[in-house]
Image (tube, rainbow, N blue to C red; front, top):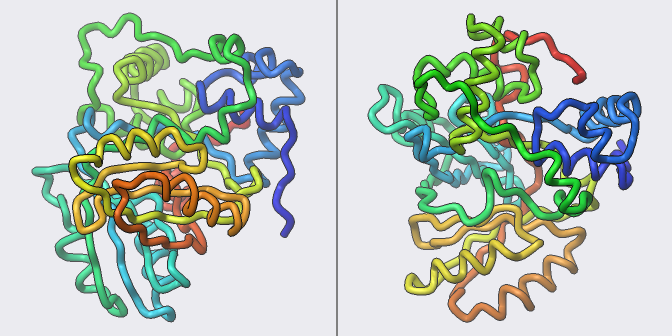
Length: 336
């Protein structure tokens, strides 16, 4: 199947959704210089053909959560099935099949002190047949990723256009803490499936009033505890080579290198980790030659990087949000 071709208007719509994933399509149309019906048609087309989805995510420090990147080596005959099983779990994200189909990489989110904390790391994975090796690396500090996305998606709108899409500030919080708590679980679960769900849909999912939903979302977003992310197939931007880079960096230079890599347009994710490789990055390149140039020029210029292991990504089995078929359908999908 041919990949969806996008033009400048599509890029402006995607950029706008990155800035405010809940902005009305009428507002996006005004900023993008188009009509609301045209933007609605383009949005539906991007969803159907480009894998576009707006999801809401909690920033892990605010939610008192921890994240691990797990590398699982398995027989080629069983790796894909293991990866699909991991993708169906609620505690995983960014599940990828790498290294010729014999390795699975996945991010696992845990809540310290909870009953099931680290169940996947300590119990479930070691019991899975077909696995030959498992390593887990704690994500210590993210330099790019989460609320900060790949810059290739953020070059379509001018600064004055971006200013019109700043997310709303929190008002009328009525004393509620702008940190996720147990009462927010239905709201966060619904937004994780569809970050553009209407206030009426979210009111049905939570049992709150629409006005309470609006105030709570505004408060969580203003505090930084909740942010909107965008899933889309990077191939629509001409990306054909996605590679995980496991780097060894002289510890005293780790922060400087991490900050430098966060400025590289080729990278969508940069994080310090535990383990023998202490810096992880995800490179997006149009072709193998572009990856070669990046490795031998930009990365090679950083002397504090003493080693690099490259793991080409064959396929992404799960992106940031939950698989749409793994949660109860509490929402009525709406094109707006």
